Image (cartoon, rainbow, N blue to C red; front, side):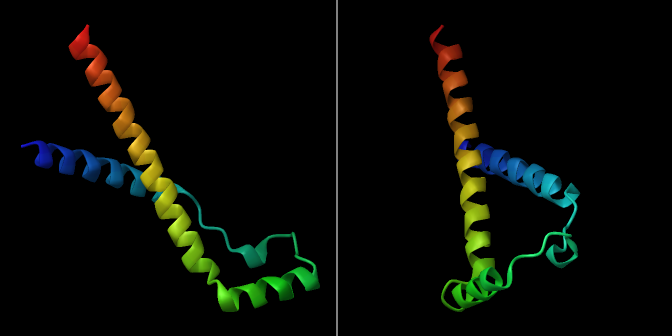
Amino acid sequence: MVSSVLGMLFGGILALFMLVLGLLPTIDVSTLPIALPEPVSRSLSAINWFIPVDTLLTVLTVWIGLLIVLNAVLLIMHVVQSVTKG
C-alpha cells in the first residue's frame, strides 16, 4: 500500500519534472554570440578526453533532480508529522 502510494507520488513528480524540462527551449551553444577564447576551447577539449562533459552534466542533472525530490518528500513528511501531532 505504502509502496504503491510512494511509486505513484514519485512517478507523478518525475512526470511533472520531465514536462517542465520538455517545455524549456533547447539551446545550440554554437549559435550563441559569445565565443570562448581559443586557449579555453583547447583546454576544454583536452579535459573532455579524460572527463566526458556530457556524462558529467547528465550525472549532475540527475543528482540535482534527486535532491529536489528528496527535499519535497522531506517537506511532505514534515507537514504530515505536524498535522498528526497537532
